[in-house]
Image (cartoon, rainbow, N blue to C red; front, side, top):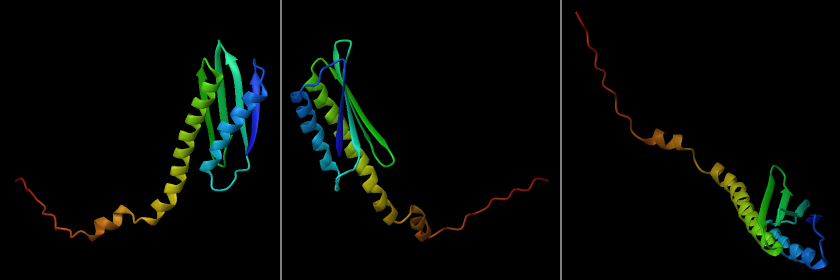
Length: 126
């Protein structure tokens, strides 16, 4: 996982970069194998608010989290929590598909029920 950090309207110091590496590095725990992708982190100031955007392009999806607050470190924490929540949801969705394919379809359960003959009511008018 390659971490690319961009700064707009803000000077990124070594301590900010180290904090972002530490927090975003925890995302790797959600993958069994190391992923070979670029994680883009955009840090900028917009209307006196510190904004952090994290985006991860995966195989079939693009996961993105954004956070705004008055403190830069708090914005990084909020964006990291949002990203963890989305990755948990994505991983659950992927792991659920093979299990669903193993289950029997509901239609087979309907065939095992005994069926009753239906009565028809026929009315003739003269």
